[in-house]
Amino acid sequence: MNLRQAALALLPFLSACVAQAPHLAATPAPILTAFDASQTLATPVMTLAAPMMTLPTSNTAEAIPIVVSPVPAAQRAFREPLVARADTHAVVLLYHLFGATMTSAQSLSPDAFDAQLGWLADHHVEIITAAELASFLDGALTLPARVAVITLDDGHVSTFARAYPILKKHDVRFTLALNTEAIEGHRPEAVTWDNVNEMLASGLCELASHSHIHGHMERLTEASNRREVTLSRAIIEQRTGVRAETFVFPFGGHDQRVMSLVKEAGYRAAFAVGTGRVRLDSPRWELPRKGVLRSTTLSDLAVLFSS
Image 1 (cartoon, helix red, strand yellow):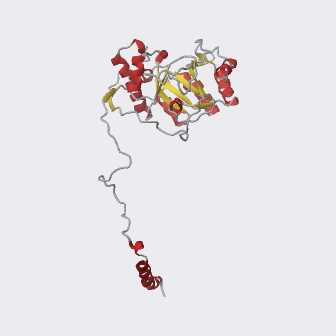
Image 2 (cartoon, helix red, strand yellow; image 1 turned 90 degrees about the vertical axis):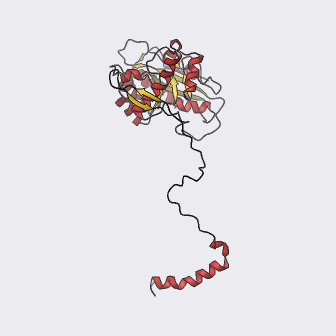
Image 3 (cartoon, helix red, strand yellow; image 1 turned 180 degrees about the vertical axis):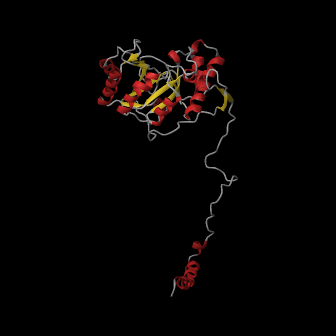
């Protein structure tokens, strides 16, 4: 008997089984083919009319029209959502320049930066990103008692040339706050978009908006500030494909109206300057950051993270 004959021989038996168990002969499940737009989705989809903005390619080049879409919620889950610990405190460290021969008080030698990252690792200080800190403030992220956020402002060329190799060496994630006019204007002291995208590709770099022209926002008009918080993010997204979730005030300057504009623009948190630690009840739109200077020692770092 071949296979076809055997199958035919089984048909009477199978028919009898179905007759004895009518519930097995219920209507078969439909075959899923193309998407049926008439079906109700489990999660509704909302479309928003996005305003048009003009994105400059440089100071002289022809502008490129782009669409600014709304800021999504957290773009990815860093950890499983859990109830945040009340005893957690985070220190947001602020860096600007890197170079042993630079005379600026804000310039840190590569050796000192290397030692600081090593100290954080040796003392089990968990390093997170600015967006993760926002998730902590949401109560959606459990963290240990001592946490650090490494923020690097302005996108100076020394960030890529000197700091980035050390960050890679220690496998440390960091938040790069970019004021976009400097990069778009091809200033010699600024990183390039190729540099930025290389850092992003490492998986260590997160981008934050640091405005466009890097002006004192508490002194600008409302119209100018509205442009600062939206254009900078639009340029970053256009050049890198990454949506900035947090905002960093240039010079730390802000007031209530500036904070309101940043919140209205859809950022998840904003950073100023100061010496305080970030806790669950910290003000989300003016989170303090501690500037790290050439004079900062490891003992100073230890004080920041003491209980």
